[in-house]
Image 1: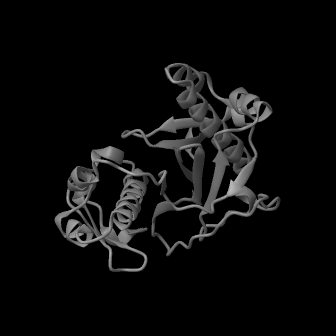
Image 2: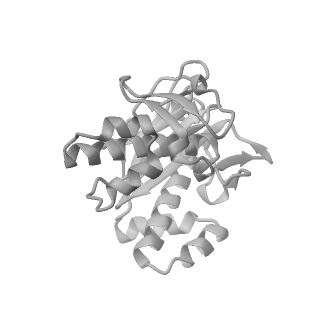
Image 3: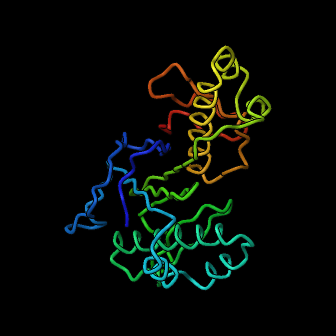
Length: 239
């Protein structure tokens, strides 16, 4: 039930030794550590959050007790099933990359809440990140390189003018004016996913205000110019 990414998801990763993006194949490579994921690659996967009853049972079976408690805390059945499916799929993927039983994986959280994998009490060299929206989950994997991924469902926003003031910098807002409504929405979601992927990559998440992140939108693809709230060298990251 796992498929490769074909829709618009943005990833942000620590540039390190000039990482390159790589789409994962339908089948994980069987040979080599981490199923063939090398230090110069990022694997990106998606999974449906509307799985069959059999697949949902499989997802639920591998969740940790803490994850099951979190799932049960959701009032909405839809939100609970999305959490169970996305985190169950994450564990199944991690188990393939680490050759470990999915239910025994030790997934911990950093000081700001970013998940990471521990092996024998130490941080593993396999880095990962998860995002989900509107029935689809995206997963990014890398070796010794922090990665962030964000996925958003493209939809009409009634308050888009107000949202731009909390997400876009003044210079980015200048590029926003004069566009058609459709192009404004497309630009907003593109910028938002780029920024949130970066925010998740750093581990700070929403502790970084989106409007504090300056992007060069003229670059193809856009590049990170400045972060005004934390000491993060923009050149250390790629979008």
